Length: 95
Image (tube, rainbow, N blue to C red; front, side, top):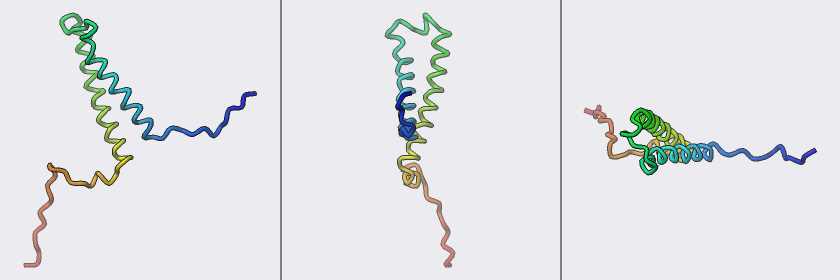
């Protein structure tokens, strides 16, 4: 019988999300680098079309993953104002 401990620590959710982000970033980099290996739109028009669509989808998932990581690691940053934010104008009711 093997002596495998059953109380092994699990990866944290942030660590798993960061691994997902890293893997998806590698996928987009690989698609971007296909020209190095001779895969051009002129040679493989259908393949490159599908890969560009896949890359767009992966970028969307990367953005969602980055947002999820930020929510876990730094929730107060949700309430910080950015340059694009505008404050609501509140009318003075003391008049």
